[in-house]
Length: 164
Image (cartoon, rainbow, N blue to C red; front, side, top):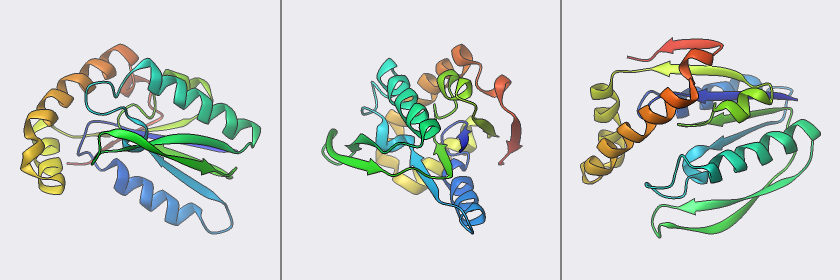
């Protein structure tokens, strides 16, 4: 059972890289991609102990080859309103800010970090998701940077890629 975590600042291209890995690894393997956006508890409580517990549950179930379920966050209603069932997979890819935190690294994940300047990352996110979230994204950049500094995510990565 292979565990891959793709992390880095918002707008760095983590989802794109996860899709490329999915396509590459799917031939002859079962592959599952989990996006952190589905697991966050909104903007203000996203990178919390609750996310760490979810990632521990996911990593443990993957390592044991067990089915697991996760509540999925709906950004339209701003609440968890779906439960998704995940079957065991040969390769599990976790992608998003916080995907490669210590709990995941301790579970044996291969970590990919994507670098991007804050300005380019912000511009990419606003072009993708709309300028109406600019205030939240600027606050998110502060939150993610604090998380990365505390977790030493970039410093612990197996592979560092520049996505600018």
